[in-house]
Amino acid sequence: MILNTLCPFPLGNARTLEPLLKGQKTVTRRLWKLRHAQIFIKYFEQQTPIPAISKDRRCPDCVIVGSVTLTQLPYCEQLSDLPESDVIAEGFPHLSKKEFINQFFGGDDSLTVWVIRFNFTPNASRSLNFVLDK
Image (spheres, rainbow, N blue to C red):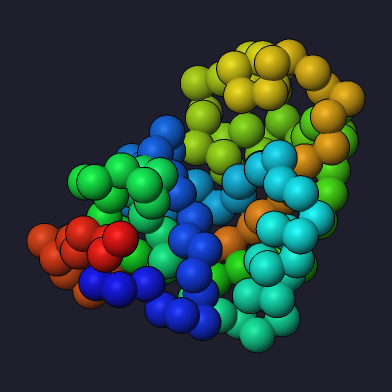
């Protein structure tokens, strides 16, 4: 399956594929430059479905597992302001806020990250997974 040219930047879910597929993951935090975040802001404004992929798009066995639609304008947040409930929505119910920040952001709660909130729609058939064309 070729990525839609209207949406050339998919959202990877390598560490949280299972919670995503179960509908438990509804938010992600990313250390993006403003230029990259502006692409996702445009996706929100146009309500463009974003391919949800199983891994980094450069992995040869990466597949599109569905799509996400942003539910809120992407925004910046300092990790120290991360709500504890969002750790669960990130797909990590077994981690505390501190453990989450330690594991994914080197323990630096002063970092400012982009918060992306979304709804996930799985592929029509779970048996249909398409390898991304490179």
